[in-house]
Amino acid sequence: MTLGVWEEKKSGPLPSTIYCCMSLLIIVLFLRLLPPLKQTLEVDSLSKSVIMRPILMKGHERPLTFLKYNREGDLLFSCAKDHTPTVWFADNGERLGTYKGHNGAVWCCDVSRDCRCLITGSADQSAKLWDVQTGAELFTFKFDSPARAVNFAVGDKLAVITTDPFMELTSAIHVKTISSDPHEQTDEALLTIKGPKGRIQNAVWGPLNKTIISAGEDAVIRIWDSETGKLLNESSKEIGHQNTVSSLFMSEDGSHFLTGSLDKSAKLWDSRTLTLIKTYVTERPVNAVAMSPLLDHVVIGGGQDASSVTTTDRRAGKFEAKFFHKILQEEIGGVKGHFGPINALAFNPDGRSFTSGGEDGYVRLHHFDQDYFNIKM
Image (cartoon, rainbow, N blue to C red; front, side):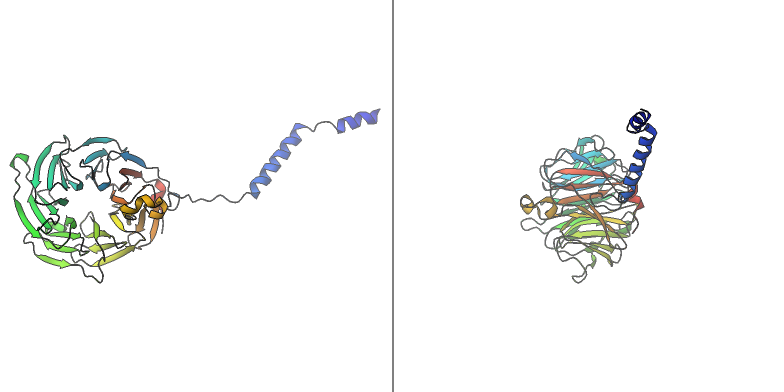
Protein backbone atom coordinates (compact mmCIF):
# COMPACT_ATOMS: atom_id res chain seq x y z
CA MET A 1 0.00 0.00 0.00
CA THR A 2 2.75 2.35 0.91
CA LEU A 3 4.70 1.33 -2.15
CA GLY A 4 1.67 2.05 -4.37
CA VAL A 5 1.34 5.55 -2.96
CA TRP A 6 5.05 6.18 -3.54
CA GLU A 7 4.81 5.06 -7.14
CA GLU A 8 1.83 7.35 -7.76
CA LYS A 9 3.77 10.36 -6.52
CA LYS A 10 6.79 9.34 -8.58
CA SER A 11 4.78 9.19 -11.75
CA GLY A 12 2.94 12.48 -11.12
CA PRO A 13 3.77 15.88 -12.69
CA LEU A 14 7.20 17.42 -12.05
CA PRO A 15 7.41 20.55 -9.91
CA SER A 16 7.11 23.83 -11.87
CA THR A 17 10.61 24.94 -10.82
CA ILE A 18 12.12 21.99 -12.67
CA TYR A 19 10.18 22.90 -15.83
CA CYS A 20 11.48 26.48 -15.66
CA CYS A 21 15.09 25.36 -15.30
CA MET A 22 14.79 22.97 -18.22
CA SER A 23 13.21 25.69 -20.44
CA LEU A 24 15.99 28.15 -19.67
CA LEU A 25 18.62 25.52 -20.41
CA ILE A 26 17.04 24.73 -23.80
CA ILE A 27 16.87 28.46 -24.71
CA VAL A 28 20.52 29.03 -23.79
CA LEU A 29 21.65 26.02 -25.82
CA PHE A 30 19.56 27.17 -28.80
CA LEU A 31 21.03 30.69 -28.73
CA ARG A 32 24.59 29.35 -28.54
CA LEU A 33 23.98 27.23 -31.63
CA LEU A 34 22.77 30.22 -33.69
CA PRO A 35 25.33 31.83 -36.10
CA PRO A 36 26.52 35.34 -35.11
CA LEU A 37 24.37 38.17 -36.44
CA LYS A 38 25.97 40.29 -39.17
CA GLN A 39 26.48 43.93 -38.26
CA THR A 40 26.38 45.28 -41.81
CA LEU A 41 23.17 46.07 -43.62
CA GLU A 42 22.87 46.79 -47.30
CA VAL A 43 21.51 50.05 -48.53
CA ASP A 44 20.44 49.51 -51.98
CA SER A 45 24.12 48.53 -51.91
CA LEU A 46 25.44 51.81 -50.46
CA SER A 47 27.71 49.89 -48.11
CA LYS A 48 28.06 49.51 -44.40
CA SER A 49 24.69 49.71 -42.74
CA VAL A 50 23.27 52.69 -44.59
CA ILE A 51 19.52 52.43 -45.12
CA MET A 52 17.85 55.33 -46.88
CA ARG A 53 14.14 55.55 -47.56
CA PRO A 54 13.66 57.98 -50.45
CA ILE A 55 10.85 60.47 -50.84
CA LEU A 56 9.28 60.11 -54.29
CA MET A 57 8.31 63.45 -55.79
CA LYS A 58 5.94 63.27 -58.75
CA GLY A 59 5.30 66.63 -60.38
CA HIS A 60 6.59 66.25 -63.91
CA GLU A 61 4.89 64.47 -66.80
CA ARG A 62 8.08 64.03 -68.84
CA PRO A 63 11.70 62.99 -68.13
CA LEU A 64 13.78 65.12 -65.77
CA THR A 65 16.66 67.13 -67.25
CA PHE A 66 18.20 69.13 -64.37
CA LEU A 67 18.15 69.63 -60.59
CA LYS A 68 19.43 72.60 -58.59
CA TYR A 69 19.39 73.55 -54.88
CA ASN A 70 19.44 77.12 -53.68
CA ARG A 71 22.37 78.29 -51.57
CA GLU A 72 20.61 77.67 -48.24
CA GLY A 73 19.52 74.19 -49.28
CA ASP A 74 15.87 74.62 -48.31
CA LEU A 75 14.54 74.76 -51.89
CA LEU A 76 15.01 72.40 -54.81
CA PHE A 77 14.37 73.42 -58.42
CA SER A 78 13.70 70.81 -61.10
CA CYS A 79 13.55 71.02 -64.89
CA ALA A 80 12.00 68.55 -67.29
CA LYS A 81 10.84 68.10 -70.86
CA ASP A 82 7.28 69.06 -69.84
CA HIS A 83 7.92 72.84 -70.21
CA THR A 84 7.32 73.62 -66.51
CA PRO A 85 10.16 74.20 -64.01
CA THR A 86 9.08 73.29 -60.48
CA VAL A 87 10.17 74.30 -56.97
CA TRP A 88 9.98 71.95 -53.95
CA PHE A 89 10.68 72.00 -50.24
CA ALA A 90 14.04 70.25 -50.03
CA ASP A 91 13.31 68.69 -46.64
CA ASN A 92 10.03 66.85 -47.20
CA GLY A 93 9.56 66.99 -50.98
CA GLU A 94 6.42 69.14 -50.87
CA ARG A 95 5.78 70.91 -54.16
CA LEU A 96 5.57 74.67 -53.69
CA GLY A 97 4.81 75.82 -57.22
CA THR A 98 5.67 75.93 -60.90
CA TYR A 99 6.99 78.52 -63.35
CA LYS A 100 4.73 78.59 -66.42
CA GLY A 101 5.73 80.33 -69.61
CA HIS A 102 8.01 78.08 -71.66
CA ASN A 103 6.72 76.26 -74.73
CA GLY A 104 9.47 73.66 -75.00
CA ALA A 105 11.59 71.33 -72.95
CA VAL A 106 13.49 73.12 -70.17
CA TRP A 107 17.10 71.92 -70.17
CA CYS A 108 18.76 73.81 -67.34
CA CYS A 109 18.24 76.32 -64.53
CA ASP A 110 20.18 78.31 -61.95
CA VAL A 111 19.14 80.35 -58.93
CA SER A 112 20.72 83.57 -57.69
CA ARG A 113 22.69 83.63 -54.46
CA ASP A 114 19.96 85.58 -52.64
CA CYS A 115 17.32 83.18 -54.03
CA ARG A 116 15.27 85.96 -55.56
CA CYS A 117 15.83 85.20 -59.23
CA LEU A 118 15.66 82.00 -61.26
CA ILE A 119 16.99 81.62 -64.81
CA THR A 120 15.94 78.81 -67.16
CA GLY A 121 17.04 77.74 -70.64
CA SER A 122 14.56 76.10 -73.00
CA ALA A 123 14.17 74.46 -76.40
CA ASP A 124 11.62 77.16 -77.28
CA GLN A 125 14.59 79.39 -78.22
CA SER A 126 14.48 81.47 -75.06
CA ALA A 127 15.94 81.87 -71.60
CA LYS A 128 13.73 83.39 -68.92
CA LEU A 129 14.21 85.19 -65.62
CA TRP A 130 11.65 84.44 -62.91
CA ASP A 131 10.74 85.79 -59.50
CA VAL A 132 11.37 82.79 -57.24
CA GLN A 133 8.77 83.72 -54.63
CA THR A 134 5.84 84.73 -56.82
CA GLY A 135 6.59 82.69 -59.96
CA ALA A 136 6.21 85.81 -62.10
CA GLU A 137 8.11 85.97 -65.38
CA LEU A 138 10.52 88.91 -65.16
CA PHE A 139 12.24 88.89 -68.56
CA THR A 140 12.79 86.75 -71.66
CA PHE A 141 16.04 86.49 -73.60
CA LYS A 142 15.15 85.53 -77.17
CA PHE A 143 17.45 83.61 -79.53
CA ASP A 144 17.34 82.14 -83.01
CA SER A 145 18.05 78.63 -81.77
CA PRO A 146 17.26 76.52 -78.67
CA ALA A 147 18.84 77.69 -75.40
CA ARG A 148 20.48 74.97 -73.32
CA ALA A 149 22.88 75.73 -70.45
CA VAL A 150 22.44 78.70 -68.08
CA ASN A 151 24.60 79.80 -65.15
CA PHE A 152 24.80 82.89 -62.92
CA ALA A 153 28.22 84.41 -62.29
CA VAL A 154 29.41 85.01 -58.75
CA GLY A 155 27.61 88.18 -57.70
CA ASP A 156 24.62 87.46 -59.97
CA LYS A 157 25.36 90.46 -62.22
CA LEU A 158 26.19 88.30 -65.24
CA ALA A 159 24.78 85.12 -66.73
CA VAL A 160 26.13 82.75 -69.36
CA ILE A 161 23.65 81.14 -71.78
CA THR A 162 24.49 78.64 -74.52
CA THR A 163 22.48 78.07 -77.70
CA ASP A 164 22.38 74.97 -79.90
CA PRO A 165 23.34 74.77 -83.58
CA PHE A 166 20.24 75.31 -85.70
CA MET A 167 19.87 75.48 -89.47
CA GLU A 168 22.97 77.46 -90.55
CA LEU A 169 23.73 78.73 -87.05
CA THR A 170 26.56 77.22 -85.00
CA SER A 171 26.49 76.73 -81.26
CA ALA A 172 27.24 79.87 -79.26
CA ILE A 173 28.00 81.15 -75.76
CA HIS A 174 26.24 84.38 -74.75
CA VAL A 175 27.15 86.55 -71.77
CA LYS A 176 24.25 88.69 -70.55
CA THR A 177 24.15 91.48 -67.98
CA ILE A 178 21.60 90.85 -65.22
CA SER A 179 20.03 94.02 -63.86
CA SER A 180 18.98 94.29 -60.22
CA ASP A 181 15.80 96.03 -61.44
CA PRO A 182 13.78 93.82 -63.81
CA HIS A 183 12.32 96.94 -65.49
CA GLU A 184 15.83 97.94 -66.62
CA GLN A 185 16.74 94.51 -67.96
CA THR A 186 17.81 94.41 -71.63
CA ASP A 187 18.39 91.64 -74.17
CA GLU A 188 21.77 92.98 -75.26
CA ALA A 189 24.68 90.54 -75.07
CA LEU A 190 27.89 91.66 -73.39
CA LEU A 191 29.82 88.97 -75.28
CA THR A 192 29.00 86.28 -77.83
CA ILE A 193 31.43 83.43 -78.48
CA LYS A 194 31.00 81.31 -81.57
CA GLY A 195 31.18 77.74 -80.38
CA PRO A 196 32.42 74.49 -81.93
CA LYS A 197 30.43 72.08 -84.05
CA GLY A 198 27.75 70.23 -82.15
CA ARG A 199 25.82 71.25 -79.04
CA ILE A 200 27.42 72.85 -76.02
CA GLN A 201 25.81 70.78 -73.27
CA ASN A 202 27.27 72.69 -70.33
CA ALA A 203 28.80 76.09 -69.56
CA VAL A 204 29.79 77.45 -66.14
CA TRP A 205 31.80 80.36 -64.80
CA GLY A 206 35.40 79.73 -63.77
CA PRO A 207 37.23 81.17 -60.74
CA LEU A 208 36.52 84.86 -60.06
CA ASN A 209 34.34 85.05 -63.20
CA LYS A 210 37.48 85.43 -65.32
CA THR A 211 36.79 82.40 -67.46
CA ILE A 212 33.93 80.34 -68.87
CA ILE A 213 34.26 76.55 -68.98
CA SER A 214 32.26 74.71 -71.64
CA ALA A 215 31.83 71.12 -72.83
CA GLY A 216 29.54 69.29 -75.21
CA GLU A 217 29.03 66.89 -78.07
CA ASP A 218 32.57 67.05 -79.45
CA ALA A 219 33.91 65.68 -76.12
CA VAL A 220 36.34 68.61 -75.73
CA ILE A 221 36.40 70.76 -72.59
CA ARG A 222 37.31 74.38 -73.29
CA ILE A 223 38.25 77.37 -71.15
CA TRP A 224 37.40 80.80 -72.58
CA ASP A 225 38.34 84.31 -71.48
CA SER A 226 35.06 85.83 -70.25
CA GLU A 227 36.01 89.36 -71.32
CA THR A 228 37.51 88.83 -74.77
CA GLY A 229 36.04 85.45 -75.75
CA LYS A 230 39.52 84.11 -76.54
CA LEU A 231 40.07 80.36 -76.25
CA LEU A 232 42.61 79.84 -73.46
CA ASN A 233 42.82 76.07 -73.15
CA GLU A 234 41.17 72.83 -74.22
CA SER A 235 41.41 69.18 -73.24
CA SER A 236 43.42 66.78 -75.38
CA LYS A 237 41.98 63.66 -76.99
CA GLU A 238 44.58 61.51 -75.24
CA ILE A 239 43.48 62.24 -71.67
CA GLY A 240 40.05 63.77 -72.28
CA HIS A 241 36.66 62.19 -72.89
CA GLN A 242 36.05 60.07 -75.96
CA ASN A 243 32.33 60.82 -76.31
CA THR A 244 29.77 63.55 -75.58
CA VAL A 245 30.30 65.36 -72.27
CA SER A 246 26.80 65.21 -70.82
CA SER A 247 27.30 66.86 -67.43
CA LEU A 248 29.60 69.36 -65.74
CA PHE A 249 29.62 70.20 -62.02
CA MET A 250 31.75 72.95 -60.46
CA SER A 251 33.04 72.59 -56.88
CA GLU A 252 31.86 75.05 -54.26
CA ASP A 253 35.21 76.87 -54.12
CA GLY A 254 35.66 76.85 -57.91
CA SER A 255 39.05 75.14 -57.75
CA HIS A 256 38.01 71.99 -59.62
CA PHE A 257 35.11 70.56 -61.57
CA LEU A 258 33.68 67.16 -62.46
CA THR A 259 32.53 66.04 -65.91
CA GLY A 260 30.48 63.03 -66.94
CA SER A 261 30.47 61.52 -70.42
CA LEU A 262 28.72 58.95 -72.57
CA ASP A 263 32.11 57.21 -72.78
CA LYS A 264 31.21 55.60 -69.41
CA SER A 265 33.54 57.72 -67.31
CA ALA A 266 33.66 60.82 -65.14
CA LYS A 267 36.75 63.00 -64.75
CA LEU A 268 37.93 65.54 -62.19
CA TRP A 269 39.75 68.61 -63.57
CA ASP A 270 41.64 71.63 -62.26
CA SER A 271 39.60 74.76 -63.08
CA ARG A 272 42.58 76.99 -63.89
CA THR A 273 45.03 74.71 -65.69
CA LEU A 274 42.63 72.02 -67.02
CA THR A 275 44.90 69.38 -65.52
CA LEU A 276 43.26 65.98 -65.22
CA ILE A 277 43.18 65.00 -61.54
CA LYS A 278 41.11 61.80 -61.27
CA THR A 279 39.09 59.44 -63.46
CA TYR A 280 36.11 57.35 -62.35
CA VAL A 281 35.20 54.45 -64.63
CA THR A 282 31.72 52.90 -64.74
CA GLU A 283 29.97 50.32 -66.90
CA ARG A 284 27.24 52.65 -68.12
CA PRO A 285 26.96 55.95 -70.04
CA VAL A 286 27.11 58.85 -67.58
CA ASN A 287 24.35 61.47 -67.81
CA ALA A 288 24.80 63.32 -64.51
CA VAL A 289 27.47 63.96 -61.88
CA ALA A 290 27.67 65.76 -58.53
CA MET A 291 30.14 66.22 -55.67
CA SER A 292 29.40 66.09 -51.96
CA PRO A 293 30.15 69.42 -50.21
CA LEU A 294 30.76 67.57 -46.95
CA LEU A 295 32.70 64.39 -47.74
CA ASP A 296 35.17 63.30 -50.41
CA HIS A 297 32.43 61.60 -52.38
CA VAL A 298 31.23 61.95 -55.96
CA VAL A 299 27.98 60.52 -57.30
CA ILE A 300 27.53 59.43 -60.90
CA GLY A 301 24.25 58.59 -62.61
CA GLY A 302 23.18 57.41 -66.02
CA GLY A 303 22.22 54.12 -67.57
CA GLN A 304 21.36 52.51 -70.82
CA ASP A 305 20.16 54.76 -73.63
CA ALA A 306 16.55 55.86 -73.11
CA SER A 307 15.44 54.46 -76.48
CA SER A 308 16.16 50.91 -75.27
CA VAL A 309 14.68 51.20 -71.78
CA THR A 310 11.38 49.49 -72.57
CA THR A 311 13.15 46.28 -73.58
CA THR A 312 15.46 46.06 -70.58
CA ASP A 313 15.04 45.07 -66.94
CA ARG A 314 15.89 47.91 -64.54
CA ARG A 315 18.73 45.84 -63.09
CA ALA A 316 20.26 45.18 -66.51
CA GLY A 317 19.88 48.82 -67.51
CA LYS A 318 22.11 49.88 -64.58
CA PHE A 319 19.95 52.81 -63.54
CA GLU A 320 21.39 53.27 -60.04
CA ALA A 321 23.41 56.24 -58.78
CA LYS A 322 26.98 55.16 -58.05
CA PHE A 323 29.07 56.69 -55.25
CA PHE A 324 32.86 56.93 -55.57
CA HIS A 325 35.56 58.15 -53.20
CA LYS A 326 36.85 61.35 -54.77
CA ILE A 327 40.51 60.76 -53.86
CA LEU A 328 40.85 56.97 -53.90
CA GLN A 329 38.61 56.58 -56.98
CA GLU A 330 37.08 53.47 -55.40
CA GLU A 331 33.39 52.69 -55.69
CA ILE A 332 31.58 52.98 -52.36
CA GLY A 333 28.17 51.71 -53.39
CA GLY A 334 25.02 52.51 -55.30
CA VAL A 335 21.44 53.63 -54.79
CA LYS A 336 18.76 52.03 -56.95
CA GLY A 337 15.19 53.03 -57.57
CA HIS A 338 14.67 54.69 -60.94
CA PHE A 339 13.00 52.75 -63.77
CA GLY A 340 15.05 54.47 -66.43
CA PRO A 341 18.31 56.37 -66.91
CA ILE A 342 19.24 58.99 -64.32
CA ASN A 343 19.41 62.38 -66.04
CA ALA A 344 20.06 64.73 -63.09
CA LEU A 345 21.80 64.65 -59.71
CA ALA A 346 22.29 67.23 -56.97
CA PHE A 347 23.68 67.29 -53.42
CA ASN A 348 22.07 69.48 -50.81
CA PRO A 349 24.58 72.23 -49.79
CA ASP A 350 24.62 70.78 -46.26
CA GLY A 351 25.79 67.43 -47.65
CA ARG A 352 23.16 65.46 -45.72
CA SER A 353 20.86 64.57 -48.60
CA PHE A 354 20.87 64.25 -52.36
CA THR A 355 18.30 64.05 -55.14
CA SER A 356 18.13 62.25 -58.45
CA GLY A 357 15.88 62.82 -61.44
CA GLY A 358 15.23 60.19 -64.06
CA GLU A 359 13.76 59.36 -67.42
CA ASP A 360 10.78 57.94 -65.47
CA GLY A 361 9.66 61.46 -64.51
CA TYR A 362 10.30 61.03 -60.79
CA VAL A 363 12.49 63.05 -58.45
CA ARG A 364 13.83 60.90 -55.62
CA LEU A 365 14.94 62.68 -52.44
CA HIS A 366 17.37 60.70 -50.25
CA HIS A 367 18.23 61.76 -46.68
CA PHE A 368 21.44 60.07 -45.52
CA ASP A 369 21.37 58.03 -42.31
CA GLN A 370 24.07 58.66 -39.73
CA ASP A 371 25.84 55.46 -40.76
CA TYR A 372 26.63 57.00 -44.15
CA PHE A 373 28.92 59.53 -42.47
CA ASN A 374 30.76 56.76 -40.61
CA ILE A 375 31.81 54.89 -43.76
CA LYS A 376 35.55 54.25 -43.72
CA MET A 377 37.55 53.22 -46.76
